[in-house]
Length: 470
Image 1 (cartoon, rainbow, N blue to C red):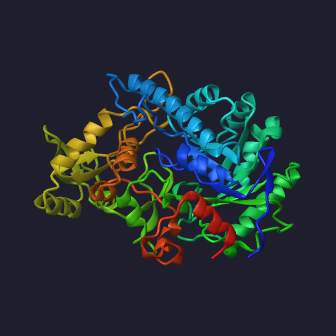
Image 2: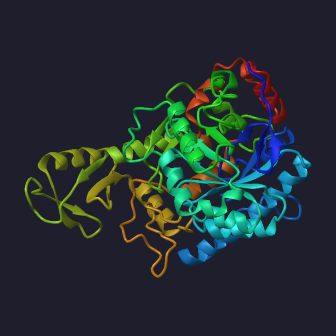
Image 3: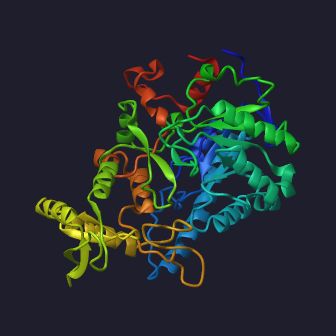
C-alpha cells in the first residue's frame, strides 16, 4: 500500500482520514476526540446531540411544550447545549491533535440557529463545519463569522458549482475542503438527483475528477476533496492517492467507526453489524425529508415497505374506473376505488389492517388500529426536528408552520426512532424495530479478518489498521 502522508486541511497538516458524522448522538465528542487524537479529523454530530447533567449522565430530551412551535424551541435549545457539550469532550480528548469537526444536517429543524449557538458557545473548540442534506448556501457565511472552516457535502460537481457561484466565492478562504459523498454507497441521507437512477450506481472516479476540474476553474486546485461513501481499505483506492489529476484527497470513514469500543451504540447494534450480508443495506424513500436514505433492512424498514404496499388510489367522487364506494374513517365518508382495489382492501381488512389513512397523493394506506394510533400520536407530538417534514406536515417557516400538504402516514417520525436506537441499542428489540442506518459496505464486517472472532477495536486501533493496510 502507498504511504499515507499528511495533507493541508483546515489550516494545518493532518492525516487524510476523516470520521464521518452520524446523528442522532452516534458520532459524539468521545469518538471525534479519539479520531482527532490519532491525527485525523474527528467529527461529532450536531444533530440532536446529547448533553449531560452535573453527574455526567445523559439528559433525556423530553418535550413539554403544548404546541409544535414551543417544542421546536425546546429542540433547538437541546441541540445547542448538546453541540457545546460534545465539542468540549472532543477537545479535551484530542489534546490539540488533529481537527475537530461538527456535522450539521442542513435540512434539520433550526439548523442555522443550532449551528450558530453551538459555535458561539464552543469558540475555539471546533475547527470545521461539515454540512449536507440540502443546499447549504449560508454555511460559508456562518463559518466565516466564527473563523472556522467549512466542508460542504455534495454528490456532483454541478451541486458544488451552484454553491460556489451563489455564496461560497465570498468566503473562499474558509473553504477547508469539499466532501464528495457517493450517493449510491454512503449511509444516512443520500444526494441522488432526479436524473440519477438509484438502481444504477456510477463510478465515483469520473464524478470526483469532474469536481476537481471545476474546482480548479475556481482556483481551488489545492483544496482537498474528501471522498466519502464505500471506503473500507485504502488499498482499494491506490489510484486515488497522490494522483495529480485528482489533487489532494482525503478519505472519510463513516460505517467502520460504528464498530469501535468508543462508539456509543449498544452491543446489540454492534453484534448485528457483524452479521450483515450484501444487500442488507439498501436505498429507500421512506425518510420524512423526502431524500433517499440508506438503512438496514430490519423489521422497522420491512413494516414500512409492507405498509406502502397496502396502498390504493381513491377518488372523492365516482369517476372513470373508480366506481366502488368505500367509507373512510369513523363517519365512513365515501371515497371511490376501482372494483379490483376494493377486493384487495377487503383482503387486507380480513388480515387486521382495517384502518385506512389518507396520503397527500390521493391514496389510502391500510394499517392496524394500533399502528394508526401510533402514527397519529407521533404526528401530533412533532417537535419540528426537520425544516420540513412530510410525515407530520411541519415546516419551520412562518406564519403557519406547515408544509401546506397532508401529513403522510407512509413515512415516520425520524427523531423518535433515531433517539430510541441511539440510546436503547443494547436491546435487540430496539435494533430490530427502529431505523438502523449504515453505509452499504457494512456487510464487510462479517468477512473482514480484522473483526474475526467478534473483535471490536478501539478508535486508535482502527486508525492504525487503516494506515498499515490489511
